Image (spheres, rainbow, N blue to C red):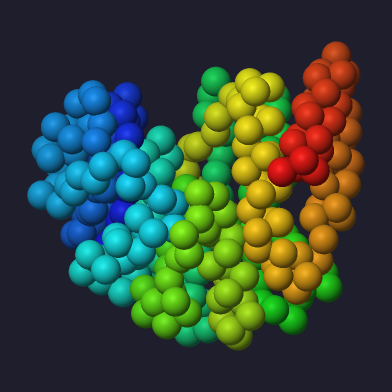
Length: 276
């Protein structure tokens, strides 16, 4: 398969073999591992699957710039980014990249399903962000989707390398480089496609501290890149949609005992976002 797959890693020995086994099953011809000086057996495991394992200093990793480095290394124009714990469903790479048959599509991202051990909060977040239907997003739909139009995730996302590089590549960002690039692509007249049939199992059960730190990063990103909300719409509407959907999720599951915990996390995330 003429596609380059890029996986940044750090101490990934628990999951990286499963990720790479799925890539081998799809006959991916170019697998690039960029490892941030792992302390465990990540590099040893990765070397058993690909001869393209590159080690960088941990302090030099950056979500945007490291992916630019990977783009320069990629042998093919279609580049898929995966995270080290995103386990592919069957034939998901093939399903993802088939969408580039639509000539105006520059980015495709797939569906993320919760792991079996995912808690209720993690499950809801995945169901909210990754519906069971596909969407073709173009700039003329910004009044319909608002800031969600630029949603994208490099946990499982494919790009046309030449388009990304023509737009200046990923910026130096510690968070949100995927959303940034989706916004740039849409503004340039290209389309972003969400394919619900191409999926990975990927979720995290965040503690309150981790939720706080994550939304602190989200807030910092949108403040530093305020052109995104000025162009596509404020995040407030999306936040309200998320809370409304939570109530629906709780009602459908019948687990009303979770309501106080959901509300606590919502307040914590809102506070973190605002003080960023």
